[in-house]
Length: 112
Image 1 (tube, one colour):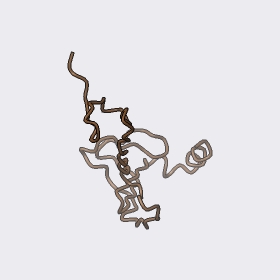
Image 2 (tube, rainbow, N blue to C red):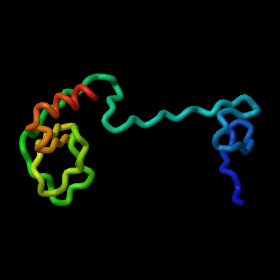
Image 3 (cartoon, rainbow, N blue to C red):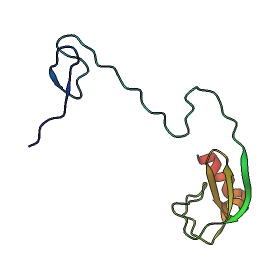
């Protein structure tokens, strides 16, 4: 077995486990701030997002993990689908069946 990870108290020089938040001498280790998730605003202000493309587009041939936003079927490369992309990196796809079948859209929208 290996040695447990340690850190040293800056006041009394005692070796402690890295998950300990305080030492027996009373020293409190500072908490690290968590990193903001990708796409989150740290100052809580809304960033205006602009639509870059909206319309029919052919799915790229080597695209992975693209699925329809309504029926969740996997969209293969070379198929035609409705595509929306925004300047913040979000991209959405819908298959031809979901865009053209108004009844299907209404049923799916009420279920979700």
